[in-house]
Length: 214
Length: 214
Image: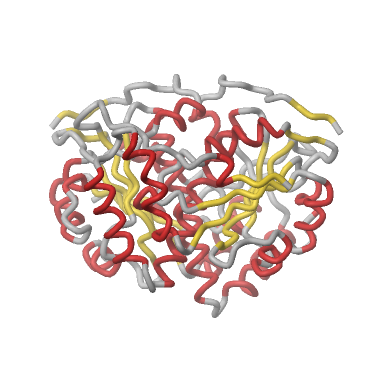
């Protein structure tokens, strides 16, 4: 099992990372990321924005063979889950508002936001989220997805490749990895090395079909 | 009204873009993006991945004063909606599976995916999505959010700042901008210039609270 250092540190522009990223369907097995590199990817992912600054996410990094096999069994047996160096289970929380005061406190302590602003955010978040399951779920998926995209681009910048997967059994993942009752597994993100160099990005819809200027 | 060219073309690394991006709460009014720059941002946003390669998104770029005022009225009167250079209404589609064959055809024509693979994707997407409103909504939010994050980082790389907003009246936005019945406005992304240089990223939760290595 080779543990690789980052291959392209700090040299990839954001434009290059976006243009070069391809969803990889076959990973080369036998590679690993150092825990420090996994931590760095998650640290970058958590710089994504969230409504109310909820930071309503959690990342389970399946990087041991046993964990990846366990995950594969609840992800429709997809080979790439086992072959990737690490697969992140990116979860969103349904109870973000209940933790918000605690999450904001360090920013209040550092003078980044005023206490009355933090209090107003907490009150507004409770008003919008408490008892509203649909809003809670939407926000969990939105936050986790923003983090997932940041993580994939960060990985691309370090010379790794990635694949996001929404095809898995959510209840199975929750049980196999002991997720909290308030946690939704939103997306799996596999990171590692590609098995082949010839995977190409699929053609995108014409801009005229997806953009309206008003 | 000053129309600005990109300020930092191609020089920003992905790591810098992630680390430097801050959700901006006050935009400097009186700036605009050229339509070509708006198009370039959306082109980059559409390089985000989607399940089944759905590309189940649409971007309404509110950049005229009238459009921004109309949007502000259905976004709880937030001043930044009017002051930003452009506010993207990023929509997800609930009927992605019904358009998938058409979306995949150019990739089949170019030999990027085989016809039988495309057919299998279309069949699988129909099996999972048809009649399943919850799955449709989750996927619409996931896809639009992945695109939103890509757009924000692309903008950061060009020297603009951004703010994602989920605080708006979805029905009001749908009516004001004539969204399709199958379209969900998932997130607003304001892009422009900051009113002040001193907005700081809020403190993030400790890594130990959000990452589990297994």
